[in-house]
Image 1 (cartoon, rainbow, N blue to C red):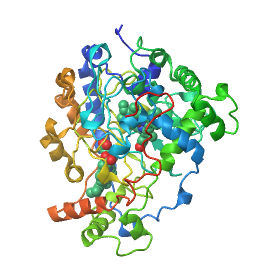
Image 2 (tube, protein in one colour; image 1 turned 90 degrees about the horizontal axis):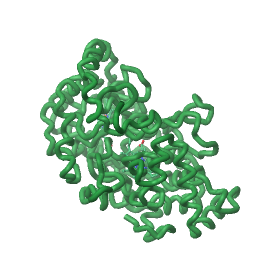
Image 3 (cartoon, helix red, strand yellow; image 1 turned 180 degrees about the horizontal axis):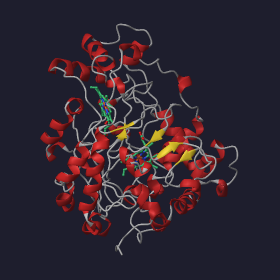
Image 4 (spheres, rainbow, N blue to C red; image 1 turned 90 degrees about the vertical axis):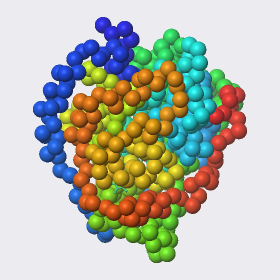
Length: 472
Ligand code: HEC
Ligand code: HEC
């Protein structure tokens, strides 16, 4: 049927672009389905403004899961080691780098096949060059070891749940291994099996071939690679009581070590706002304080950005303009990004994305699930008037490392007006009018969420990794 259709498994999380093969299948049918449902989408409740009394309690170390420092030290090496990728050419850190504050500084990143970092990353060359950009913005990893974090990814497809009896609901259903120490550890199992992010194309290496079939076929191949590197073995035996020899190393220990690293390394809550919450009335400037009062009061940002990490972890539509390769999911004839709906299968979740956590947000532009908004001010203005902001948006606002052979596809989704109309029909936000001066105050407040030690991390980037592969 389709020349390169992927299995339901790998499609469900790696988001392969099937636009080319699927567009003939009648977008018009989908359009009418969406038209019928638009009325029901519009009737969704809008965010209710919050009161200034909604200020969260200060964060404390007790709010975070505990991880073992020796496992974290090992995780630091694995996080930077390209050995976890099919073609040994990309590490977790390539897209979540210390120099880019645990993100990659671009709207849509370049996955395996590329080289370099951030805006200087290229799409590679020859047969290994990339076929598409990563379909979503790489989020920063701040404070994800907090005990209240229930969802990973913009669409929440890795989540705390007892649905499958293993503690998590993920695209691997019942096939998730036992013994994962956290949601962060469960998350690790997915980028390694994503064609675009780390695995590569089927035919290029054994991991990519396995990824095509099912996620759980990938994991033993990755642990085998790690086991074979002598320098890793003692690090695992020291960090894990039950690991006595190389053959005891599995994807579970690898994932738990990386989770320990990301949780400890990117735990950071010493911002002026945190000091204010802790009782230091002078921690905020006058503008930041005014911005905070608007955020938690009159303007009602905390209607969604509520709780200790400034997100209620609900899924909402903001009407950001679509671009990039899009994602596909079962039974959808076109590549696009329908957000949470691809996971829940509920139409009321169409084009809804997880409300992001906000600490250190000033350090990790661009913003939104596809990085459409280049600055905090643009993102705030978008919230205040999403339809106007969507209409005024120009492709130059996207921060995309140049990849000449993708130029004709990059903004194809943006040009589909029917798709944009569906996105606009799913907007869940209606905030009161805000003056330019007040916008400046809100942006000042967002800057007060930057930790004093955010740029000074306990472990940082390792100079070398046990595989001997180059470190980005
Ligand atoms: C090619 C770039 C790339 C690589 C490599 C990569 N990631 Fe990501 N990461 C992303 C993108 C993009 C997302 C968001 C995907 C989505 O929401 O669908 C993400 C999401 C995450 C999240 C969820 C954050 C949140 O707030 O929900 C975590 C945690 C994470 N990555 C850790 C890792 C780890 C650990 C590795 C290595 C095993 C890794 N990433 C490799 C790009 C990358
Ligand atoms: C109706 C819920 C809702 C309200 C109210 C809301 N936001 Fe958001 N916010 C979101 C969602 C959802 C996203 C992510 C949208 C996406 O990726 O498509 C977001 C994204 C953001 C981001 C970008 C974060 C990142 O890492 O990309 C910032 C900054 C932000 N909001 C600040 C604010 C401010 C300031 C206000 C008040 C003016 C506000 N939000 C009100 C739901 C809301």
